[in-house]
Length: 507
Ligand SMILES: *[C@@H]1O[C@H](CO)[C@@H](O)[C@H](O)[C@H]1NC(C)=O
Image (cartoon, rainbow, N blue to C red):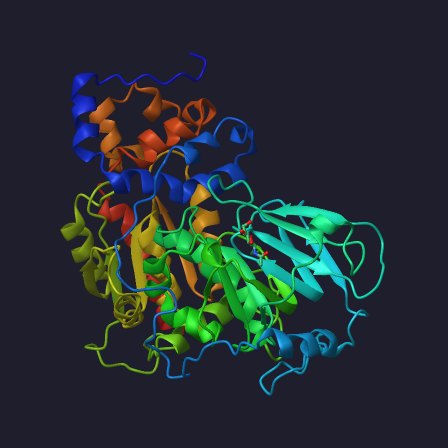
């Protein structure tokens, strides 16, 4: 049969798809595509154009970039800008650490010239980044970043860096990073433009666009890597944002304000030359929705972990619960752990959600059923999730809300039928464990999948998931992610719920 998958159900299937095909449909595919590529290298050659042809929907928002409204009380202020005459002096004085500058950062105080440095990693498996120290000049609308050496150095070097954390991301323009050969420039045409604005603070240049707009990608591709890139500066860092989406910056404003005390710069509309002593181009994705300790440090110099990121979020959104309910110390039977059941509205739904709710209640949980809305205010979602001890849902972006659970809580991922476990673990299993949460997984059997009644037991989608994977990402996404709902066998599921309760008892 050569791994070819043909829809057996004919017209009935088509209309079913049409009824359910909406914008979110495509987004759900994107959520998992990249990890699918990472974990299933055999598909790498055939799948990337899936991304180029799919548009991620944008939530309309009216707020402007760098809009005021400070969610965490740290106070917002504009990046102090010096005029060119002052800039000349600044150019030779080296970066003068401000009071808030991290003391662990010795490079910032190095005399000019000695610190000239461009370190680029354009060969990373997922991301490409450059770090520049010295006389660094940017022209945002030209997408250029230039290091002007203090004295004659080696030859001119140039790198092209995509400032999105996934280097293969189509639709995100690259930044040209150049190290000039000498202060006077190589030739007249590339003479370094004088500084229009000089910044004391270092900067991180990154791009939105790409897969942002999908909740999971917002965190995995931007917020977590940005935390890793900027936390060490303790807020004294400027963000230069390419493909700046005002609604996105507004949605995550509280997080951005906590990482940077300056208004973000809309890079695409910035044709002035800005000068820095230190600039990072691009964000490094350590691993999906997580951090690898040792690759980034905080302002105290200690390594950052994913648990630090979730602690940072609890702080940012003033979430009251850092730990789950203490069951061991409260014999009172009316004190029950709370479980948030995420009910996806369109596909990969739990068909028997009421039955699952009752099963969870019988296991000892107090249950909330919620359908996350893409346009919900993050602060509101965060508070709602944080009021719970456990999160339960079918594989999908809603499980990203695990970042707001109290540490020590539990996440149960229901993995749809079709050998999706590897991907499910990479997207959520490992991240959740890295957050300091207990991860439990429930794999749906064919009998619990609506694909069985839709396609029949003889269809390759049911009989031979491996063949569907061999047929490529399109088929995996189409069937297992796009056409499947689950009817959880609550008897089979009961031990998983019991494990979740047990875990919370041991806290
Ligand atoms: C920055 O780049 C843009 C686009 O290439 C160009 O029009 C502008 O003159 C540049 N600005 C400076 C100050 O060189």
